[in-house]
Image (cartoon, helix red, strand yellow):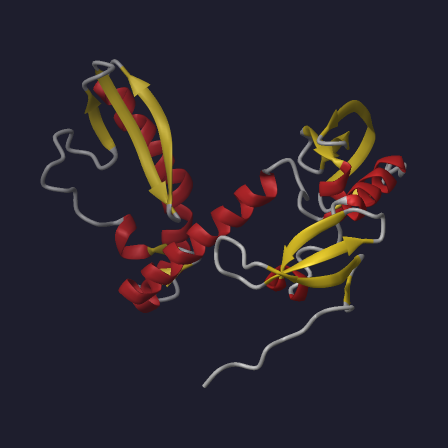
Length: 230
């Protein structure tokens, strides 16, 4: 069955007015010879016209950018960013502003990215969201594996588990670092590995691990041992 032919002649799409049918583009998409309100003419694919991914010869975007560049956004908030001042830098015809993030960092962002919501922080927001996803995935994995023994995002059995057979120090989290020719100490709590330091003396590394266990493990073990959670 042959599809019905579409005639867009005379129709408007944004600033384009369709003049006549053109040869298909290199992807064999139907294309049309169009005239922009500013007078420029161009061949545009039917797909881009209907999806509104092309609304002009480029003049509309230039006007929008020019208008945005003239806006004074001083002290305005965009997500976690507050615009401080115009940086004096222009890139791709877009003014860049010096902004201060809620986390304290300063960053330079184009005004177009601020207005569109493309940039909402110095980068810390993405890191926070990524950390949340990682923690959520880790928590779901633990819930599936340990069930009711999972409390406050950590597994109680993992806090008191036996020393791995390949451990040569005799203490969990303490290992000999060949690169540094010293003993290193670390602890894992709620899915996060915390590095405690490197020590020439093995006992110092063990002491660091014991102190960390008292800080992270002891309170939660004492809290839930009284509640009958195993």
